[in-house]
Length: 70
Image (cartoon, rainbow, N blue to C red; front, side):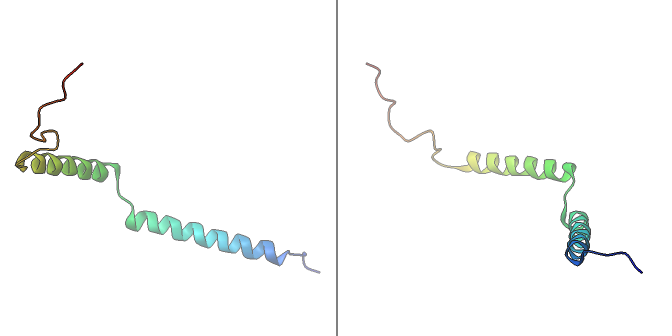
C-alpha cells in the first residue's frame, strides 16, 4: 500500500511553491537595483531644485515682514 497523504497539506505546499516561484520571477522582471533607485532619487532631487530655482515667489517668501518679537 502507498503512504497516506493529507491532500489539504499537499495542495497548500503546491500553491506555496507556485507563489514563491511567481514572486521570484516578478522580482527579476519588475525589481530595480539599488543603483537604479539611487539614480532616480538623485534625478528627482535635481528636478525639485530646478523647479524651486525657477519659481517667481518662493514658499518661504510670502512678501510680508516676519512677525515682531515681543
